[in-house]
Image (cartoon, rainbow, N blue to C red):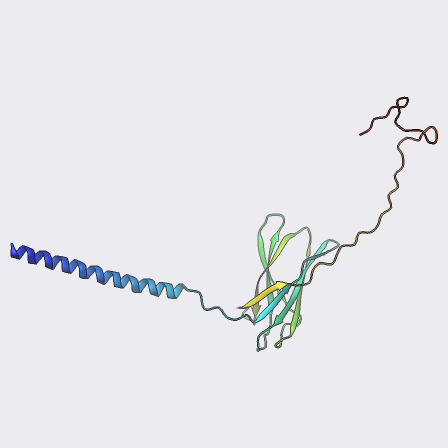
Length: 183
């Protein structure tokens, strides 16, 4: 009976030791996976993008804005990445629009502009800024740029003529003697 008790204690100790070993290994694996899948630390923004409201002129839409270099280094071969949604099938496509000028010194600004037909695209969204020949993403912040100018409505003169000429001046058009349907 003593031998059976010692055997039970030995089996319990082995099971408990194996359990703690597996638990420790699992904790190490999950911490390594969490460290590997964690996003890289956020970098400070190197550019400020001011997105202007789209303007419509004739049958074309102009999408544009300004990019300002807020870093202390020279940014070369900058381009703005926009996501455009087509009206016909709601499929999105991305376009790279180069800046003018493409190279920005610290605190210098550059403009981007894209003209599209109104019938082709329903929306445009800023996706990112790319820098260099390899088009590496650049950290940025965005803000609202210039507002759309107010639309001018040309004054029109509307002349309303009477449907029926009246018989006598000063006579009512709709009277018991001369009934007319009023909508």
